[in-house]
Length: 124
Image (cartoon, rainbow, N blue to C red; front, side, top):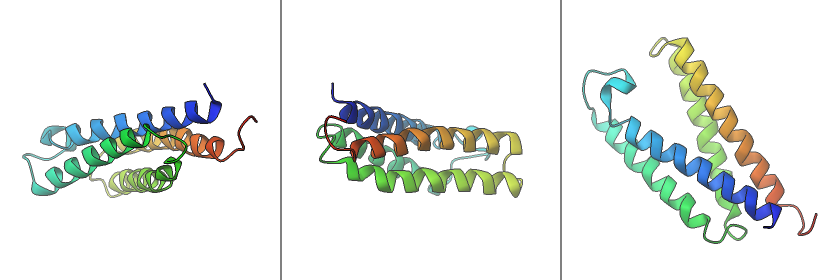
């Protein structure tokens, strides 16, 4: 398998699985540190699930749709920043915030590497 396609697929599936995890997690109020379900949780669940599905569609034509990693990288950066902000403002524990930030950094590493490799000329 072409190295570019392999890393794009790893990137798409990593991000999609994280999106599906987020989509389910935000629908469990206790997991998010609130007493009950609130409307914004449903909104983010729908967005995360939809983004995950979009990444799986990108996997069907990995090289032609590699551009989708650019906005995905932005989303992961912003999610990491939100986690850090939540920890700094004591909405969640700093341990949990740092854990979420570390996961975001790991996912970012995969996405950036996958996108960089995809931009290389074929055969390198």
